[in-house]
Image 1: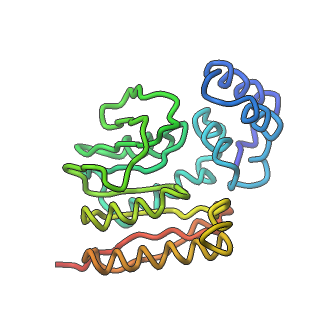
Image 2: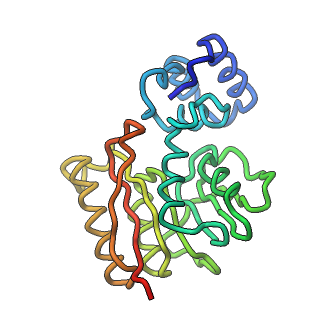
Length: 232
């Protein structure tokens, strides 16, 4: 949710300046959508990804209502990430989550994959940016965990990668919009299918049990799942 002490004029100025600084990053339609809906975050924390990423990048969000912070809290509550090497699937145009994870690491790294990334430049040596899609058959070395914040079609790939490489995983499901029109009857059916695949992968790869939580405090109705390994 947008900070209350920032005026609409300040918001539109910051966003317009950002878009002008990255003219090739957004299509004409995307620019029009962003500028038309720039106050979307006044009433809710659940906003379209293209807006959410810019809000976070420009520090326009109330920290306690920033859904990226909420997802990071879930990760840190269940896993020690300081020294883990993590990969993020479908990080978006801006590596918002990756930046936050990197700041909480000591010896570990976070590698963000998305062919739509605006830039691969990083000021933090713990943050590695890959302007490419993470593939199901990707060769991975020295990786401990995979995370995804509403990766949509990347969800099934993330589950498969976690299974094949015995990785811990934390995935926030999206609404499945656009994915439920072919194989699945609805977005909810798609979510249930993904949870089924995640449970199966967790069991078959001996990753423990699949746990569910949510981010309803951030106006997000969609589930978050992660594996919980058995204590040795």
